[in-house]
Image (cartoon, rainbow, N blue to C red; front, side, top):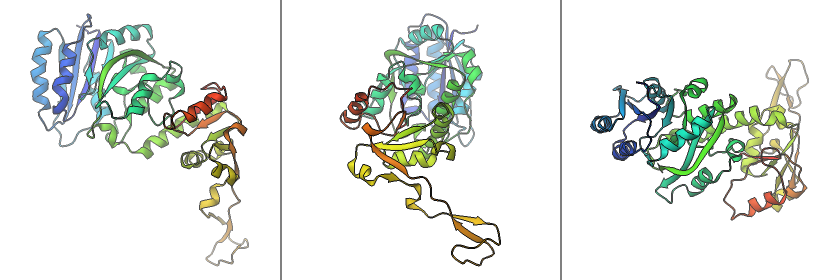
Length: 370
């Protein structure tokens, strides 16, 4: 019989957390039919034995359990495991769960209610972090985004505005968007899926209750993804989704992150940057940013042209035309729209107060990137 909800659980060496995770599945108060679809991705610890132990308990309580997996020397990765767990499941709705996390008893019930009302959505929830003092700024961001910000803050370094271990969606919508990228270790499969979801017109909903204990530890798969990889995907998505709507814009932050964004843009989008803005008087007094400040570039010109420095190696060379000098202004002298490369919740509220003082509309007059 087809289940109403399939809980999708990829597992790789999850022995320290798996008992508590599976216990939380057994404690769900959802009254519809529910199944657990586990895919064991080459675990070398006792994860398999723990899964088998809980299979009996769960099935005795009415939760059907499907177990897949492989015993290859190396894991295939989180994207592959989630795809396999989805493929072997039958539920009309998919509830994603990480093997180191713990669901509150009402999670499936409340997210199922929201997903029924929003069939083209990824439904998330608020979380409680464990340990409580880990990633405090990130946890506040997860839990406090407004419904509008769930769609406007999709370009930040924090990633999806509802985190992957809280995702709940219809199988039909997952099939329309997915599957997950199966590139394996180092691939941000959740971010890539989230971007594709937005490209296809999906919305983002959050149930404003704490429905998940979200663990932080150094073995988490997220630590295998390089920051530079995330950065390149974010820049491409910004250029695809936001910048085509603006003929010109200002980068808020004349420091390292703002300059890095400028250098990462295509030449066409660099030409749209009319200014950097900042509050740092030292940066503002400098007056301009020029990409050439830190490097000398050469262009090889056709044989036979005069060489500017008399080189005789078979080619002649000319120094590249100077790149545009971008003004650096005080933020009150700059004009929106802004791409903001200042991290939130780091300045004791000073940056947020400055931004609010301009009475701008997020998504229209500015977007957060950092």
